[in-house]
Length: 283
Ligand code: ATP
Ligand code: MG
Image 1 (tube, rainbow, N blue to C red):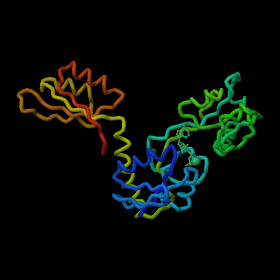
Image 2 (cartoon, helix red, strand yellow):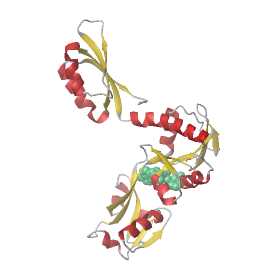
Image 3 (cartoon, rainbow, N blue to C red):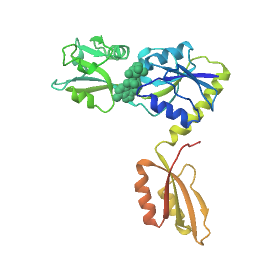
Image 4 (cartoon, rainbow, N blue to C red):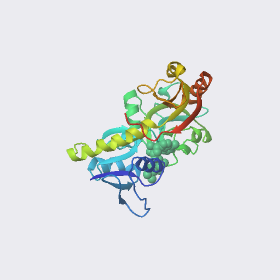
């Protein structure tokens, strides 16, 4: 049986629980329990702080974990990245006070930078040959320049709103992160087989995100032209209708082009267009 470490509460918890549920893994989330047995897959769920997940997986307290790549990089623990999961996207960036006339990375030479990611930052500055004073603080990094604790910060940014509120400006994107499934190195074959199963389920969920399933009725004579508007995974499914000269076409369309495609299909002569949510896409 596998043991998976996930964030107990916080930004990744909800998406992680939703991913497990979509994958048919049913875990009762009891706030008081550290560990829970799941139904629907031979797995046990261990609820931890996200900071502790890379180490738990590295040491084998858990076989796999779901955590941000930022934490994996910061902890510097050797683990395998099995797959990226498409949520919890953010970046770790350098930001300076708005009024600084920023000339490029050399600005950081001999400056003080406050961060909760000293390891990632130390490595970045070493690669770039910059000597700066890295000041590690646990929280509220963004207020450090205003209170005179640092000249600049290195912190997580997603929308950038927090930076603006604190009079800061992002000047260098250093590390891109999203949630990932990580695994302990050197697991036995039984566990690796279970991880493959888990990956298969997660893949079908992650790859169906951002797509819709579209059905429409269309005159048979127009099918060739419709197919050119919506090239599908292999080729669209075309089923004859009882009404002579008509058929039903089924296709998967990416959400960002959905309306444009649907409008063109309608102009061409498609009728009764249905747009459905897609739960899984199994290649
Ligand atoms: P814990 O109590 O588990 O230690 P935390 O307070 O350290 O939680 P959260 O704020 O819940 O962490 O963030 C968890 C992860 O979510 C981050 O490590 C990062 O990978 C991701 N994330 C995505 N967007 C953001 C953001 N805007 N700010 C912070 N983290 C973000
Ligand atoms: Mg944390």
